Length: 453
Length: 139
Image (cartoon, rainbow over all chains, first blue to last red; front, side, top):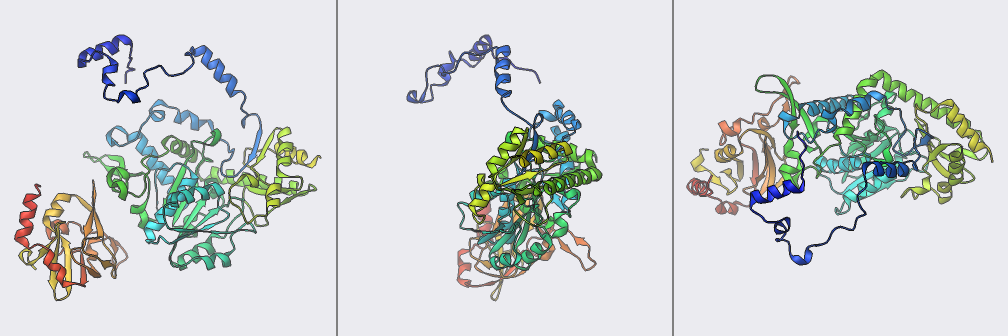
């Protein structure tokens, strides 16, 4: 496609062509009291050279994972991204691809998303996945609304207190104009108390939502949770960690009806919070109630395999207010990165990443526990992150680590909710996540930083 | 029943009344308007119907249309041939949605309901009125 100029000469030609004397004439329909009639108050334009120098200086004030060891957790992680991911996704055809509503012009991008969906279905042990949502939090919210549609129960939604608190805030936002009661099950021991949960599920409950591993890094008993949920006729929604499935059982095999996730760990950099990748998969019987785009495979008029947007009658551009969601997009480029990442790693690679993350996290926890003043806040088994309680305060721990060029956290007192955790505990506690990218040297350096007074 | 014995709603549903039982479906006119039907979402047995309120949906490749209850009552049966189901041999049987175009007034019936208020029938049209309604609506 050619680059189109818009020089003053060309503007003049266009005006003459349409028989208009000036650009201002085209604006005459706008009431004069609403027209600005002066230039915008912007500084003078910079040259490319000046601009690049200015932005580089600003950017150099950031610190990133290339210069500091990142042990931060809470939903986004510093997992390794093989260079192949950037290589393939930066190809012009993929990088500039737009929304695939014209199937005949979008086969490449549609095929990539179909492969993404297929891999997510395999990964989760569920029947169908969509071509992605925005990120993990809104994924949980969409799953909640979907469960309400599927069960036709609007009365109550029960959610584990061990769900990412920011995801919980998002769910609350999505439910704000509904009369649905959102019941949070406190998790003082780090995981869901099954007896307490059972008492909170009633016949108006659309779904029970749990996270695996949960926000504190701990492992929930999904099997028992799903049985309790289904006994009440509700759906079981699980927010999972994609890389944990290298060694943990799949949500689909443990009774999840809808599985959602944040896919940032699958080849997406931390990039200051986004763009990230929402993942949603579910059982076949719920397919018509799914939000988001669904890519399907079919044959064209010549009998050749091709791909297209299926079941569009669920979506906003056809159903309007009756649509399954207001979403009319997907995180195409991020989904492509995840597709490349998953293809490259395969089951063996995923297992290795998961095992390394888990073993290194346990090595770190075992050494940290030995430090006077350090303990793990929760007892249940964990996967790749845990909550460290530091008697001198979480902020002190973070500063000590920072002085050794290491980032840990977030501190629990930075998060909304979590009201059942005593404030004193929250002030002393923070998350530490260990991925396969962390070295023994970095872990030992962290331990030493916290051990010294 | 044959089409000339049925009652019709302005939203293209037909009703066959036998005693206090209504059999409900959509007309050939409606099926033709919709074209390329891919899915019918019918209510379960026991679902309450309110005249004029949606009781289900029928989906084509390009649109989804609500099905409106021509009379109030309670669903006592639904035509399972219009839904995908598991056969006796455990194999999945596809929905026979072509029945809505090949036999809309007979085998393509959608639901049977017990009628709560037979008086509501007077607000429905007979075949002649319905045909006139279709012509006027300009399709």
